[in-house]
Image (cartoon, rainbow, N blue to C red; front, top):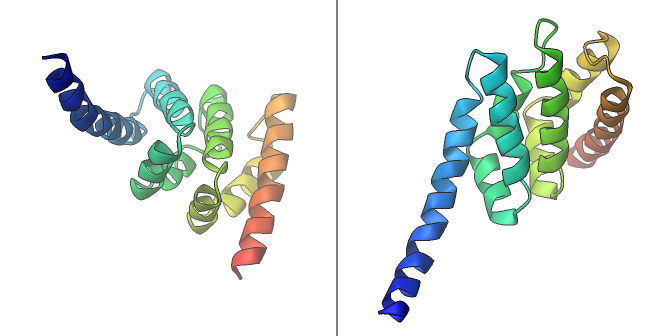
Length: 140
């Protein structure tokens, strides 16, 4: 009985994880800042594993995250987005997806527009911008 249960879990659990990843990406489209911060935090946590990161890229998480970076956005949401983008950039696939989604331009606008106000977040944004600029130059 235990072996049957273990085999069932091995087949079912990866699918549950993928559904959770897809749900987190869909939640990025929420209108309330609290829900946006929650969704961004989930994406950041999910980017820790290679399999989830691949799913996040396939579900176009970088595009959805970048849509949350704008002058009128909640400061906490924008800071969380920078952390999530950094987590996605852990693998080259994530960096490439962020570059192709327009992350360099969005982060430059955030930096130059003074949208990111907290010093640690500004520093993190600058580091991420540098890494993505290098990735973009390597793609060209």
